[in-house]
Image 1 (cartoon, rainbow, N blue to C red):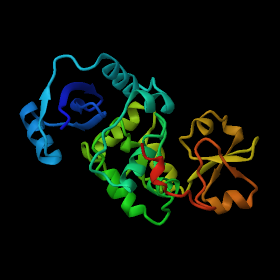
Image 2 (cartoon, rainbow, N blue to C red):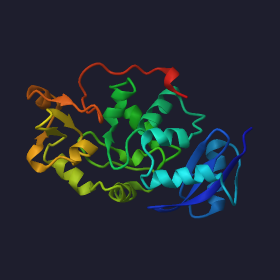
Image 3 (cartoon, one colour):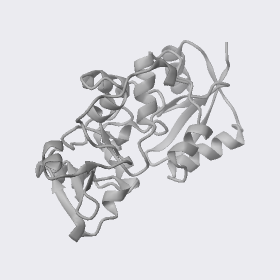
Amino acid sequence: MLADSYWIIDTVLGPAFIAYNEIGIAAIMRTETAAEFEQTFQTHFRRPVRPVADPPAALAAAVMAYLNGELAVAEARQALPFDLRGTTVFERAVLLKTAEIPFGEVRSYSWIAKEVGRPLAVRAVGSAVGRNPVPLLIPCHRVVRRDGRIGEYGLGGDTAKRALLAAEGVDPAWLEGLARGGIRYVGNLATQAYCFPTCRQARQLPDEQRLPLGSDDEAIALGYRPCDACRPSSKGPARRLDANVIP
């Protein structure tokens, strides 16, 4: 059996315990004490975990770089391996897709469902995200409801989720204001592409090039195509869930 070790990291939410082993990072939790973390970890994973004074330098540096928004998705995938033993193929697909959401952007549960080839499994996606063993590094705080409302968060609830998004430059009140106004996408008048509002390309647009859009149908009717970066469309064929994509 692989031995798990842990150290404490500083986060926007305060100190958190991070456990790892030879496979990768296994868990991130916030508890009142180290003893409580060790007990919770053992209960959940059915194996012990022990503290270390000095975690692997490269891993510790990658963790902090990621939390500070200094690692791109592709870099993070190489530098931050995860130990997702105990999850199903579907759950791993959901978690790894969640890990692709860039710093400072959000996606919906329905977007993840379509991306993993199960467009009707939105509730199952929500359950898999809710059981995420590695929050912060698999950024489930960047997953919101389809209508733009923030939704719940397992590492401290709604307040913690809002704090994490705000730290990444996403104003939750702005997102919810768009939701109340029925705005789901932003069209680029110059390129005829449409994006999620938090997509980097959308947020760089000057006001005179922005077109608020309420749905895929509206965007398509106006001749807009989905952005290649954030892939907002809920139309068209779903991707196939393939066990071979799970490392």
